[in-house]
Image 1: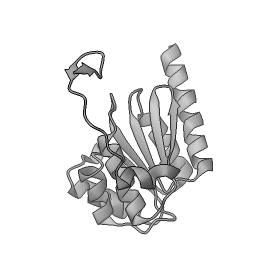
Image 2: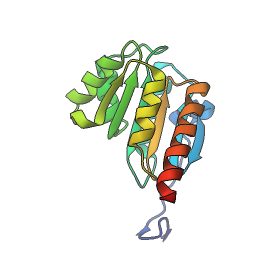
Image 3: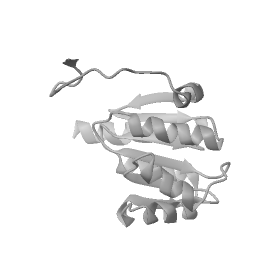
Image 4: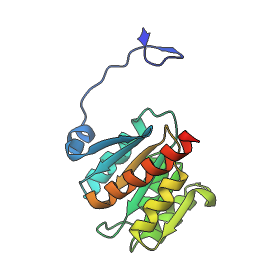
Length: 166
């Protein structure tokens, strides 16, 4: 047994590299003000499924959150269900052509109405996401380009640095 957290003892788990970890080699991890962002470049179905598995296994103090821009993704209600069931998302913000369909699927999977947000524009989605986050949350960015993720990082940094200073 070894210390894995500051509050509890757990047996050490054997870690093996799975296909999901190999396929996420193009993922980018960003931390800002205690919030962790996982940006996935792979927009294929297999890549998205792998990303949801990684989110599910990610040990976070806070919530698992998903920001999904469906502009370049071909997804629907089933994907919204997978985000909740496979990715254990507790908050979903979506935008783009299929944003509403994903939200309906997430609601069907049991996510409360207060935790499902659909935006018409990607920039609005990043602002909404930044306003809902707290330190300890982990965000999975699906279909989000680098420019949009940098905007989100700046919004989180601005919001949480002001909040922490107050």
